[in-house]
Length: 305
Image (cartoon, rainbow, N blue to C red; front, side, top):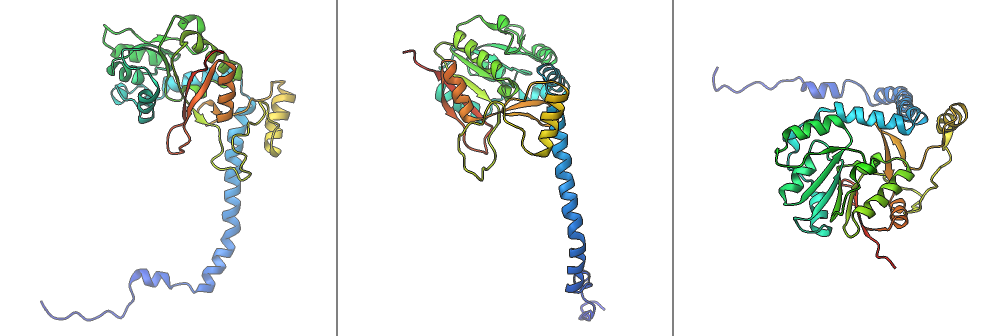
């Protein structure tokens, strides 16, 4: 009957019934029985992820790394999405431009131009940009979208000095994360020397993966590990020493070398970058310390004595 008071149910709500279907002691018994399984599964997952990261490192070589990196960027659709990236400079790039770079229309050398994000962004600000990119698929995709009146992106890597040694430039701008692909110290030193030659007075913007631990219980700060760190733990001794050095007769891995499941990379350490800059006529004017921002740094020329 409409408007008649409803009889109160004598049955508890379903959620409450489920909540109290087991006594407290029964739940504790179940949790006690399952806990070793949870811990064991967690440990197994950790070991599997460590093996998945360590085994590729035992096989690292510059040739293999270069081939894998080029293949990844050539096949990853998001890096060829020209409309998504057109004329988009990230906040950290804009901050560094405003703080350290000469005003437009300065001439900028751009390495790691990808499909044109940085190039179109810099040209929109009025800069004159000479751009290079090592992955042919990205070069072709970018050049098809550029205005025919603009100079195209050329296919060359940072190590291809003969293809980009013409200068001078007012600044050097490297693409998003490009510096992390220079895994060998000798390559990084040579490229910095080349930058110094073609850009004698301007800044250099680098972005990369961070080589610092998220936290360090020993609070070692900027203490720089040795270039060839001894293997740590049983797994690294098996992969980095016995498999890599003793069986395959390959050189030890350099500091900061890593594998992220897609390509090899170099994690940059603040003290390492300071040391490499000093050796090549630069100094670190800025190193991003905010963990919420993409890691980057700006180098400026060290005045000659």
